[in-house]
Length: 264
Image 1 (spheres, helix red, strand yellow):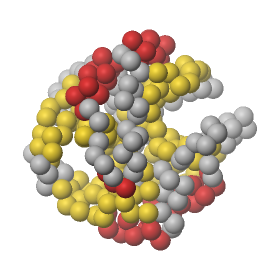
Image 2 (image 1 turned 90 degrees about the vertical axis):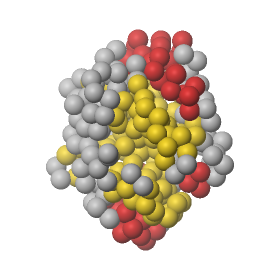
Image 3 (image 1 turned 135 degrees about the horizontal axis):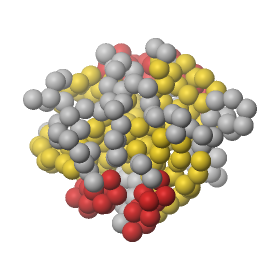
Image 4 (image 1 turned 45 degrees about the vertical axis):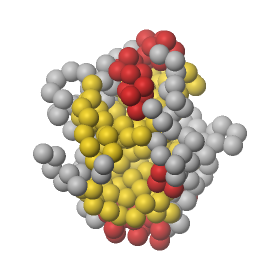
């Protein structure tokens, strides 16, 4: 289960790059009740999303020319420099870093061999997100890739991840776990095959999709539409998983919402 007892390979940070941070802060404030707290002078417009007094995500400006709004999942690394070397050796690429983040840790951003962006965060003063798998917070991360088996091989090389294969709605689904401890307790996400038009998103761009826990998927999807977003896949029940919907914010960032059922 995704939590805040971070180990190597655990999702430990999540941020949104947006071309309009004010609009993004307003949208997520209305949909999830998040408060945006600027990081202060010298942060370049970066800041924290907080809910119930805890940091649940972060937001910053999309600075690359032509960049689309997108969520980036960060995974814990004890040594970002060594992780960058492993990414290169495994066929991925380093987009930025490693760099120090004002004493809060070290950061590098990568692209995996099939084109999915991700990042790594080495903890400093800040260990990572302050809550997960709670209301309006990150509960699951999911990679959509043309070749799921090859994708898992890359991330196993970089982070030591393990997986188990399940069948969900007639499709092979790989449930990911960190490399240490019990598989079920260490699970945090999954890998699904990329399909044409999946979720209304571009099938030409493999990606990591964050899932946020909500108490009412239908009401959240309605709030997304009511505040300028788009529902890509309507709310639906997935046996053994829960009720979920894929959505897109007004600037184009794709995410999902989930009301989960206990795993059996």
